[in-house]
Length: 208
Ligand code: GRF
Image 1 (cartoon, protein in one colour):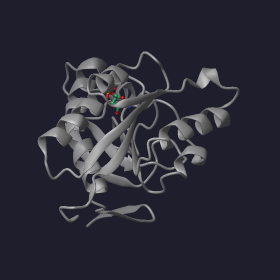
Image 2: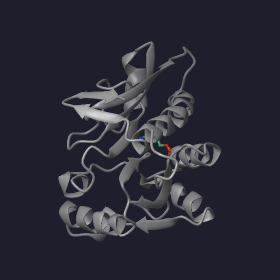
Image 3: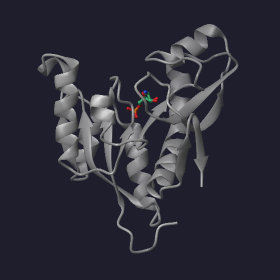
Image 4: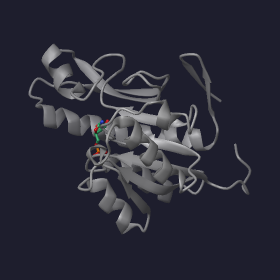
């Protein structure tokens, strides 16, 4: 437990889409005086990411760095890292960020970059996890919050939540139920990170 006087952990949140997970995190921080974190910047790889508007409405700083604006991925990651670092975050949350990050970015926050993914990893890595779970015929899927390493949807797992698949599910309906699970799981894991309660040992994450 941090002491009452400890300053909140400064969080950067990266988004590509609508930003409902960002919203859930902001709401959780608002609702919990003991959350121990604050979002100091929201960054996106596209100017039309809905999450940017959610940030602006709250007066949170925003950064936009489209990959296409740079000559190569290395230059893009360097620019993204520079712009995010300008806000001095202690940790980074990928909340529906649809780009792969290498150590050019990740090394700025060792073991302090979290991602939420809409499947029970290691099943269905990648950008089409919900569609692929439906097509495979699994009876349960879910969401995973994990620490980010250089491999896609691969780093040490912090927590998972199971979501049953119904016979009448479409990709959209199933994804909505998975997102509802993410909206609880991601803030809970971010709070643990803010309180320095995640200890990484190889692939295992111990919650202190
Ligand atoms: C989430 O399901 C996330 O896991 C996936 O994309 C979705 C983002 O939703 N990568 P939102 O932008 O937070 O609404």
